[in-house]
Length: 401
Image (cartoon, rainbow, N blue to C red; front, side, top):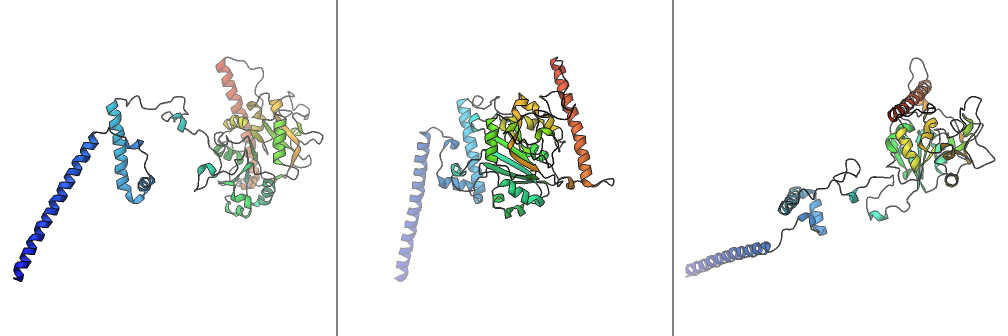
């Protein structure tokens, strides 16, 4: 009796299980059929045009779902290709804008960002809220750690309107964090390089485009009588595109043009030794500042950067040629007397040279400086001569550098 009951229960259970399976199969088939019919009633949609919810975005970004993500992307590309094929518009939808920057012709113009900046960005939050202040000016110093106190004094003369950029020729960067301002500064380090080497590689005009003025300074400058904000006001007032602070007459003075005058705000010309100036509007009597502490407007720097040679790293001769970048140069290049500095003449970079043939390191560096001056003068003269010949022009005077 018990066996009969068990047998009956077993058979009825088997029947119910079979009915459940059939019901599941039938339901799945009907669902699939309905889904297929609904799908046919809608036009195809490119997955690239869909706005995914954040959960899907997170799914796509999940490293553990790499295979599934790849399949999703493949589907997106396939859908796009099919849509283009159906509409027959593959060739007409391709982007090519010849007026875009070189190399970016295949991009839609509105996505192109041709310039950059040195503004640090956060790793979190709203990008629109990253910058509590957008600095208007840039100051760079090429430094060694041994001159840290001099640089610390100098940086204090520049307000929060200035981005601070340090080029380190001795490879020591982290030690500078003893100064609070250093933690907000930009640091670039390559051993035994000059400021003009750095300037050519890291101060491209499209990188420094946000800044109205660019200060490219040495590390051995006394700034007790200097205020950067006041300096900028005077530069704007007198229309100077290229300038420098006046130099204290008793310290490290080479040229009369850069000598501070105590009776005025700015001067643009001077008298040099007899025979040094063939034209009162030309260097070193006018249109001239030194490469020690120059300040460039945005537009002037765009020209000067292109004139800097990759291999002539000391920049000697460049100061005599700066006039090529502004017109009229004798009006737009000048020295700011009322904001003046002291040249301490510290041969720190010179000591980064290498002793050869019994010469001290600084002697080799100085010898190369003179050699570069001659090379730059020759290159500039040859370039201008070639231009005039091509244009069929006979210049009134030969280039003087």
